[in-house]
Image (cartoon, rainbow over all chains, first blue to last red; front, side, top):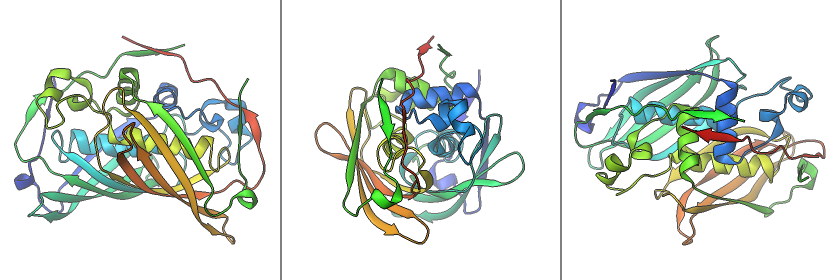
Length: 157
Length: 157
């Protein structure tokens, strides 16, 4: 059974990094559309998407935002973190089968509030930045090593 | 059959508003976890979540971000919009059964690039702000009235 381990505020150092990788599947797009209500056909309809400047279906931009959030929640600082804010700049579309790596780096610590600033980059399998931004997090105060829940089993159709 | 209609750049006016509402279900949380890989137990595990400062399971912060994105993609400016950036400040947790309303308002137009800035607020059923921020969008250049795809049918377990 795998576990999740966090970095409490005192264990975090400027320059500390972590990464999180996921490959975009059709299922991811369908689930994201169902969870958010965003049924824009550029994400869901092959024929429509082929007529757009993208030439095919693309991920919701916020799917990449969700991967950044996942990286923060699962790895750096990990469980117990409280998400305060996020800026995102979207640079390139993410297509089915693209493998997105989220790179996080601690760039600032505010001792009195235990706030941490993280530089966030999302790059595809060709090393191109698809999105970047900055996260503000209230770091956990206590060490935690917890059981990692299994991903929910879902089916479509 | 319902349709989606957009507002091309020339139809957008400063002060124009739109809204988008969704109630958080357990299914939304499960689907968001599966789509993003974010299996943090504060979202998925009742027992664990009860031990946190929230006292119960909460939505992923980026679920609210995804609702903002849905509002932009479906209503203002609607289909054909290209998402350039988003800032988000998370103020309050979103619990199961909370009804979140996204309010969007056009605050700036940049004629040379057809960029639009939108003020974005997410409020719960008690009128409390759960998140707010600013979106940057490349507005569509052409009018579009298209068939609204059905939300994907999914099942869990």
